[in-house]
Structure formats: C-alpha cells, structure tokens
Length: 154
Image (cartoon, rainbow, N blue to C red; front, side):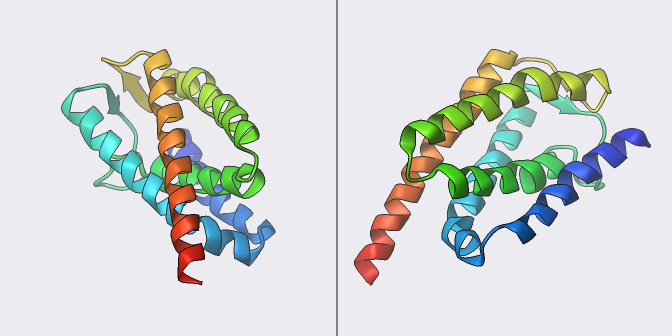
C-alpha cells in the first residue's frame, strides 16, 4: 500500500508544481516534454521486450509495461522544469541533466528496487544513466529544431 502511495505522489506532486511556472513556459516547452514522454514510453516498451527491468507495483491496471508515475509524472514534469530553468544555457542544461539523471539512475532507482516497486534484470544503472542522458541530448536537439521552425513561421 505504501508503495502505491509513493507512485501516486510521484505522479501527482510534479503536476502541482506547474502552478509555480509561467504559462508561457508551459506553452513553450510542452512540445519537447510530450516528445520525450513518447520516447520514454517507447523505451519502456523496449525494456519490456528485452527484460531490462520488471515493474512489480503499478498505479493503473495496464501499467506493467510503462511506469505511468514516472513517464507521465515525475519525468514529464521534470523535463519541462529543466528546460524552463536551463534551456538557453547549454552547459547548465547538460549539468542539470547529468545530476538529475544520475540521482535517478543511482539513488532513486535503488530506492524503488529496495521497496520492491521495480526489479532490474538486464540493464546496469550506468547504462540506464547513459540512456537517459542520451535522451536529454535528443530532447535538446528537438527543442532547438522546434524553436527554429517556430521563429520561421513568425
């Protein structure tokens, strides 16, 4: 029961933080956020197929492949916050992602595994970190592309 509460908090609390963000920031960075959420969902599909990990506790009945709390909660909103706070400063963006991805891969995932929420099988924490950091580089490229296209339209 406590594990489900943790997952619900990881899903709901980040969304509540958007009340502290300017509406323009949400509008500007929501496309890249949704793009990365799609990529994370695809990563979960790949992870399921190659048994990188197994989700043991979920908040929705269909959530045994994609961790809804992470993909559409903490990761999704964390992405928008990182872009909101660091986008124009590439090195700061990289540093923020290294710290957040490192905390996620080495500490938070360890906590989740110790709680029995997830079980890692065929992926190391270092590979998980590298995967998520690579995703942050792809996301940055997407946002730069999106901003250039948007400026061309105006």
